[in-house]
Image 1: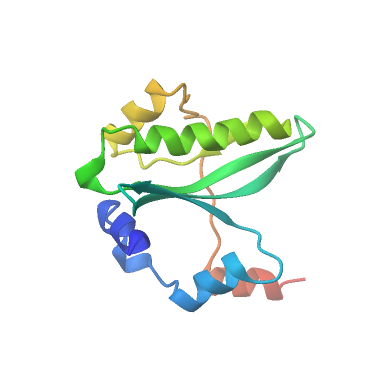
Image 2 (image 1 turned 90 degrees about the vertical axis):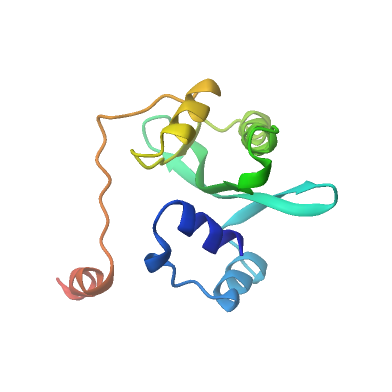
Amino acid sequence: DFVRALADYEKLSHEVLATEADITRDFFGPDPKVYAQIAEWEGKPVGFALWFYTYSTFQGRYGIWLEDLYVDPALRGKGIGKALLQHLAQRCVSEGLGRFEWWVLDWNEPSIAFYKSQGGVMQDEWTKVRVEGEGLLKLGRSG
């Protein structure tokens, strides 16, 4: 439900292909490469942070990439998103990691303002690159 709710908020519902089986396999299989923190409010799950480790050749250190951050809209502004970010930042510090990064959609002004208030710095000099679908198959077959 969280994934669909996040996709709806980001106006990307048409891109959701993941199934419950995919999530179960990737999070609970023998060699997980992706992790999640679940936020609870009054004993009920109300948000999540999905993340994985990255590596910076410039720093020579690992980091954390925050793939998704979601909090139930009815509970935004109560510190839940901040607590999720703080948890991952604390993990970075305790593990000696060099950075904590994520994307934010350019139209998502509430999130941009929130991230800036938490010390986030927008990196406008970078352009996202993606290869998927037929393009990925073609690239994988070349050579």
